Length: 296
Ligand code: A3P
Image (cartoon, rainbow, N blue to C red):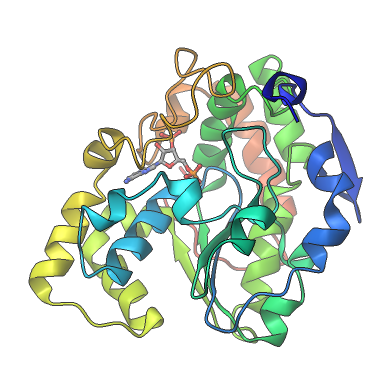
């Protein structure tokens, strides 16, 4: 298909109650039927929780910190995005997977219940990264401004409401973080937090290393921490999504590597929005005890 024909802000269509961009919803049967190899790794996140960062850490760990090897291709080519379908030059996740031999590290934003069951049947390792709701929301807002395939974000106050109601692409943040949290022990999921990665990246890189069952020297770990800093990744054309140019990603509206900070939400929420969000958050999260930090 021609790129221009696919350049559209896709409407959302619910799949088992979860709003997904129409190209994903229409293709969902083949996504659901995907059979991974037991050696494949799944990296699952709600959008904007630190996916790209984690993909880079994983690739470097699997390549013993070899920076050049990890510049062989842009992130979405090195690590297929399971459910995405174009537009070019973004390769369709399923098509790309067909061309790659396992072990692969596969990205998904699907909530737990929509992940193809083959991942669990084959006991694939899974890394989940969660980011505090407010920063995740702010990051998603700016991403929706620049990603011309996502639904129009609309005005900020309404965007906050849509987030709280779970009406954004890939659905409710609340259900997403809870879904994986509840299954993490059952399914041996490594559940990470963006804020922990910011606080002590070395500790989290080592945690990922142990989970993957690879071993790299202390020196290589230091190198990986350095190479996956926000500044280094922002300057790395194979990690900063400059591979996806306008008109698909309009980097002039907002940069993919935008700020990379904890607590940026304070620059965007009014005191009133903060209060409303917090009250609703307590209600929506009262049935779980996930140790999110930096909420206030
Ligand atoms: P901000 O918009 O807050 O800057 P994802 O990869 O899941 O789409 O998440 C993107 C978010 O992670 C963006 O957040 C981006 O800047 C941030 N990010 C990407 N690489 C990072 C890194 N190495 N360190 C810290 N944050 C990073």
